[in-house]
Image (cartoon, rainbow over all chains, first blue to last red):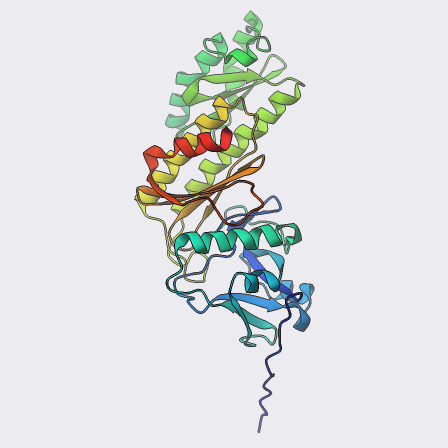
Length: 138
Length: 213
């Protein structure tokens, strides 16, 4: 009988690094564009992240879907400082987590200001996984 | 772009370039009238025209050992020289042309274009985004190109956003249907934006002026 291994959630410290893939359409010439950290209507539970302590940047890159052509690093203290909660859920990969706590009552301004904070904090860490896709349609 | 459209563009705009009918004042002393030989080269030179396929047309024309550039809606053109400013202008015009190119691409995006539930863009949103690009063109031309290029990106929620950072200021414009949500930061390193405004596309200019001021 196959055994199932369940990982215990880890605590994410403020100084821990979080990885996030960036869609080909949301970066250009080494700069992040609005949209890199947007919360989709269907993903109301939060934004996916990779917890650096449980993976490597290379491994994170290898697991990227084709249209995600870059990644960034964000210190956990940034979303936490904005009132968000970081949860290690291991969904799909042991290092997977989510930034959650986006309240339904958040205004567009609050969401945009959060995205600006994430971009400001992570832009200099942007690394290309592969060359940008020229037509954007992959 | 069809051959007929290309021919129409050439017939409408190239004569203005060749005769030097309209030259922006800042480039007046850099653009000299074409010689008779250069005029004879006109038909040959037309081969070098590059159109980017949008309402505004950016063209380039090799002629008489110089490279002429033109921006059709405003009848601007200038010669390539080794002057740094002009080379930057060339880059800027190409960046602006790329904005139009992006909008053309966004028209092809269908629902789930990011394979993660993103929404396609409505015709109304695309038309409004096109108007924003026109306003950005005007702003860049008015500023004598002494600015950095804005960026455009497709939102997964059906909005199209523009981000433009100049000096210490940053402006984001989210376009959806006939309205735009405008966010301004000064300094750009802040994340808490100035009081938010939702405006009609026709009123976008005042925010671009704020950025340029």
